[in-house]
Image: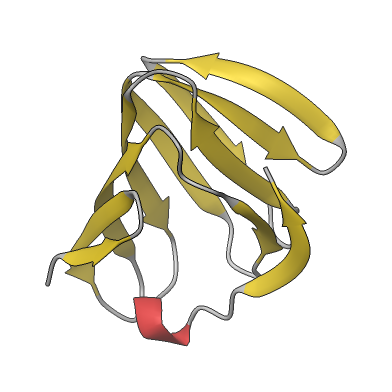
Length: 107
C-alpha cells in the first residue's frame, strides 16, 4: 500500500517477518525527524542528493550510493535536490513491528 505523508511517499514492496524492501520518494522540504530503531537498515540512493545525519555527523550524499545504518544508530535524511528516490532494506520485519524511536530534533 502506498503511503503519502507530508513531502514523502513510500511503499513496502516486500514485507515479511524476515525482510522489508521498499521505495521512498522524498521531496525537498521534508522535515526529517532524527530517530533510531533496533533493526539495521540499508539505503540505496537511486536519484538525487540528500543531507544525512548519522549520530553527530552530517553528510551530503549523492546518488548512486549505498549506505548501511547500524542497529540503534541515530539518523535522518532530507533532500537537497528537488527530490530523492531511495530503496530501503530491513533484514527483519514486518514493517509495522519496527519500533521507531523519535528524538525531538529535526534535520
